[in-house]
Length: 550
Image (tube, rainbow, N blue to C red; front, side):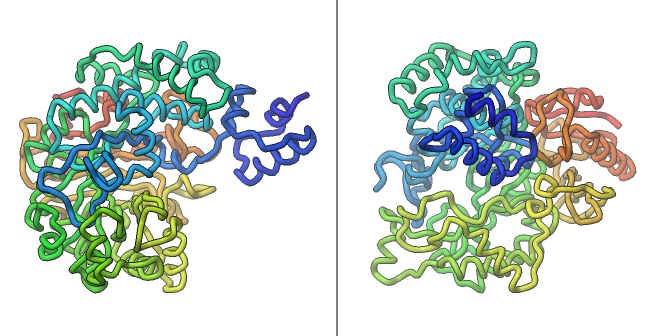
């Protein structure tokens, strides 16, 4: 019996990464191997999945970041912003350095969305993940300001890549590992330039012309489905016209660069929008049904620690804001930016690791349980920064500060069941709150240990911006059940929460609340790949939404 056979015989589902590595070391020593094989090597050689990096799919979806080509922002450039065409780092996407994992993947694939998605799916399979529920995240600047033809090109080829990958490597709804290995020439040296070039050529040979709507329709029943589509933009490029276009593209979530809640800070940093734009944009996007992931920066020039903390408080105590998610970015000093020159002249001091951790820990006091903190720092390697947070594990520093201050974060990320081991006595919980002129219901399943199993966001809109959204309509902006992603149509195992009926109960409760408040129509902003789920619950397609009369 060889290394791979012995390892896969002793490996079992649920083993920790530490236990897997210990097992690999023991067997490698027995066979006198020079180095430990990677999990991808094991999976490809034996055909058995050795799961790693499960944290990426704990929330139930496999994210795929697609970086757009370098295009300058219409308003010019924020003083802290690296990247863009002809930047210090060369021609790279706006606000990126070219050194981030998703940017490097895009560069390797010539910024071709079709190649990028194929490449990322290949990586997921090699890592033993289940990429059948994908969230596409479009990065690279203010997407809504790009030419409309290019916007559609990016999105339609993302969908086509998911569809074509499904058609190539699934037979009777089963993943064909042998066909996958043959196509990608694995196992072999994954870094071989010759292999990469040959695989690219094969992928491009099947990339023919396509129509967005056709690819969206195909994806409704594909093996690998887009369950969510996220687009990055700024408040001045996220009003009604842009919102309607994003709906047409299939977008379900907006990453909105608020950055500060003070006009003087926005003006000084050359953001190209003011606070009124942010407030208007938030209201329009929520009333169209989008989920909002707000970006908030700490330590911006002309801001102070006190202003940053006040911003945290205002973000959730002032109903004009109240985002569903939050990305927190301590400002970084990076070469090639106007901010770098200010810093060199002694006119700016960056917030460093300890201070950033203190501000974030203190700010977490204001985060309500309906919000998810998605990130607390940029995915920019520290070797390209000149000043600012110099540790990539800032979240651990924040955890230490929380413990020291006796603060327990109750955001969604800190409570979701994908990170818990045992679920005990789940119960429905409903939170009502005002938000951007409308009324929100956060309906959740929570167990006795405050573990969040799943939730539904329902909104009574403040305005009726489309014909599908009547005065008697309620908007379902999100329905999500946590735990590791389970293949579409498969039975969950062990502690996996998906497909256990929690979603149906949450949806039913939302319908009941809407009806008791005089509403007769539910309008859902559904990911293209989730529409089939809603059809089974009595919904039907109405333009970009799925709807049901109650």
